[in-house]
Image (cartoon, rainbow, N blue to C red; front, side, top):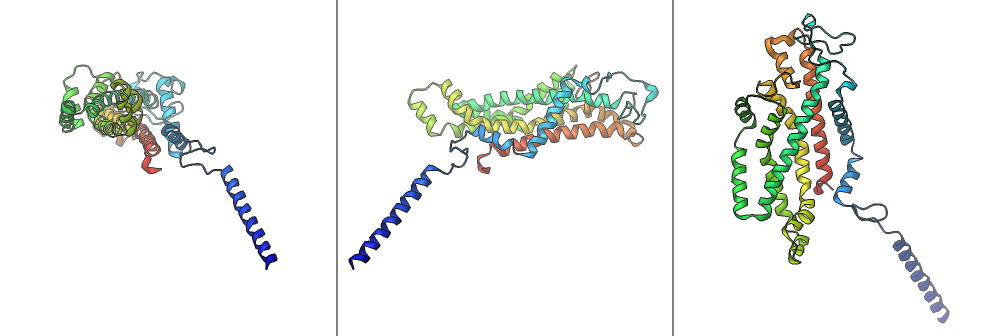
Length: 323
């Protein structure tokens, strides 16, 4: 009996030692938490989003397209050395040929050169309008969500009024009353009618952020309004604004082309894809020379699609609900 008890006690002791060793080995290799790296360190929202974006093929393809568009917008002479305003009527509607890959339009202008130089106009309008809309909308909506009260009610009612104005109809009225319709005139119009959407999103984000515990703690510790806005609320409320602005950038490029197509947008000598599409549709000239319509329309479609793809990828990376 005594020998059996000693054997059983010795076996139980080995089991306990084995359990302790397994526990110690498990403690040496902790499992990384969700959203952390291989060392177990947690990542911020922005580093986590960048980690996802680098592995997203949609983001990579859209980024390469946009990088190419920005490059030819800044230096169009890299791939198109001719003057887009140099035209020869003797070559009107000529098809593609050596050195003139996209043929000639009705005025005898090289279509390829005009398509390349038209990227500068579209990218400039899209980027500048998006920056203006994001700044103005974030400022008005953020302040309305933070202070509330009369300021919130006033901004909300003004936002509702602007939402009731169709943007294309507003462009027809606004731009038809201006004498000179340049790039900055179109950008100003887009900013004036485009800020309400960003303002509403910024307002909701700030209202959500200011109810968090860290903001309440900062307020209890005596933090000023500026410090709370800059250090605590803005970094945690800006993500939805960035997503909205990125997607809207492609929409603004399409809007500029639409207004130019309708005849109230950019005027010559400014080179615009919308103006070239409008010129190609006059007199149904594209039936005999479809290249004068297809190439500007294809460039516009690819550009808008690239920015929309970029916005979708950024939205997926910054949306916590998709993690």
